[in-house]
Image: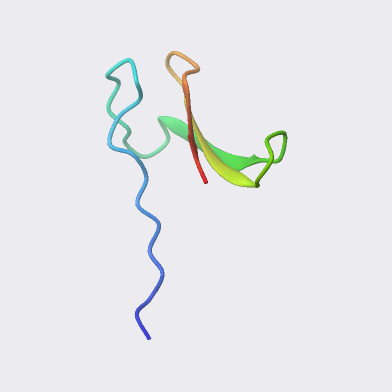
Length: 50
């Protein structure tokens, strides 16, 4: 069985590069399905994956 590896996005929609401690990772349950959310700490842009 292959290991499960979660790859974060490379950058936010505004072009800020995601390096360690430059984004927040969490879960969003306000949508129909539970999805992973990445929030840029520079501009507060959010990326939803689910």
